[in-house]
Image (cartoon, one colour):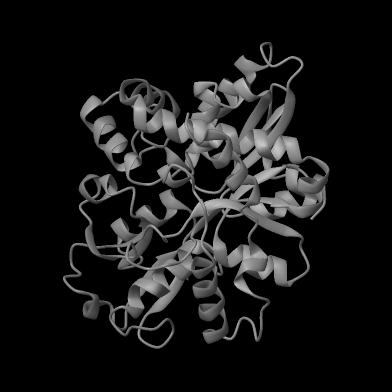
Length: 347
């Protein structure tokens, strides 16, 4: 994908590009509505202070807490303290396209997309991430059990993404299969999924299990989650060519990520205030619940295990998407993050 075709998906604003996401989120509460607008304003406000710093762009594919470390790291100054001026960009499910085109230098992406892209020749490498899918099946109130979904429609994001495989993994716990027992329908990102299930267009959707507040807000029922499954749903990606040529920038980004995680765990008041700014939320009880959820998401050093990649490979083989794959370890390079961990020992 060329740089031109990528940036055409954005709205020009103040010399920057940001994804046209705001309109779709109106009516879904301030928790996520105007999320990317806040990120853009924070970046613009930092531009004067960032003179002399290395400027990079970092994409994230969901407004969920599982990928909030990029905008949170910017808002808190954790990246700038390491000499980086980071522009966080929301691109629903398309971080890999931006990485390959060179429009961004780092990006959050789902495990299945990364495996498929690498097998197709992309030189992507995972340098940090989460070892659990962090997905839940949220159903219409009329659905009382997973078996009630037989013969029904369920909503996902884009086919082949984490949302797709998260739904497959969740339903397999009850011996339900896509296109055999349940029809999968692509209904878009989080706002589209919630609109689809509340209107009855589909009977259940896949959402981040870190966003359980949506259940109460929209009178939905959680049928199951994937928190007990070894599967990398979200990882920080970089191209190998960029990492080789810019090792210190990679190290700086990961130092900022680790510092952001430390901020989350040691400064609850400040973190909660920043979450309110990022999500444009003022309900303190709601923000307190969000913060408690965020506490449980990230380990101190988000090192991805080969097993979390192997389960993706196995699922892609089972679905006929791939025939063979190199070892799971070949998709990972945890050396950068382990080096950061070594730096921090004793601190």
